[in-house]
Image (cartoon, rainbow, N blue to C red; front, side, top):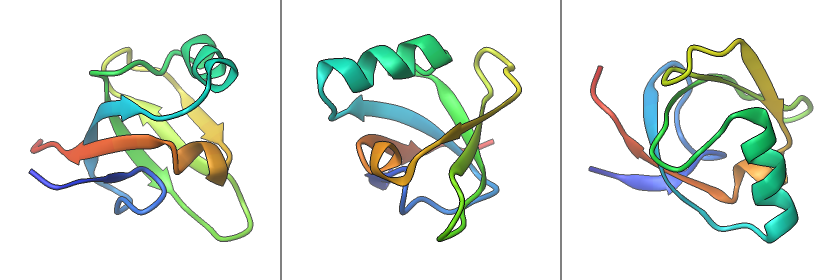
Amino acid sequence: MKITSLHLAPSGKSHKIIEITAGLDARKKLLALGIHVGDTISKISHSRWSPVLIRNLTTRSSKIAIGHSLAKKIMVADEPL
């Protein structure tokens, strides 16, 4: 199992959130968006100039856009489909 930040994780695969290494405000924002430690997410797209698009597979949410700096603070592990 390879652990990396969501920012560097490959698109089109599912990943399990292992840890959120952010401050209190950033963790509150992620909780408000429905992103929790232990959730399985899918990274939809990642572009240098646009936000990182993800989908929470655990809660079956719609697309969620987060910034690059916040994506760097979300540690994920490869999750087999």
